[in-house]
Amino acid sequence: MNSAQPRLTPQTAHVLDVLTQNGALSGAEIGRHTKLKSGTLYPLLLRLEQAGWLSSAWEEGNPSELGRPRRRFYTVTGAGRSFAREAATAQAALFGRLALS
Image 1 (cartoon, rainbow, N blue to C red):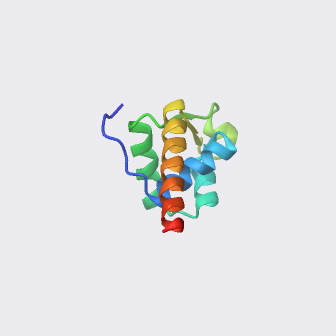
Image 2 (image 1 turned 120 degrees about the vertical axis):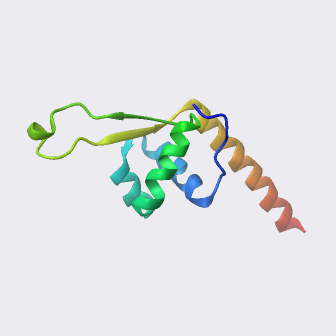
């Protein structure tokens, strides 16, 4: 686990939201939900996993029996869920203050 925290970009927030709402998803499924290209998505998933915000695991099964490559499934960890919740609260407070200005 990396001690550096990823920045909460719109893409990061979208990935965390999709996983929080849907549970474990493969990278391809996350890409379909977020519309992020693989060159953006997979480095982001790696950074989130290294920070401890996501965990991942390969699906069980032999690719020749499955008739396709195995998929890697990602889930939000408790730390990732806490960070997303705190960031959403901070953003809501900031936008609320801007709206009142």
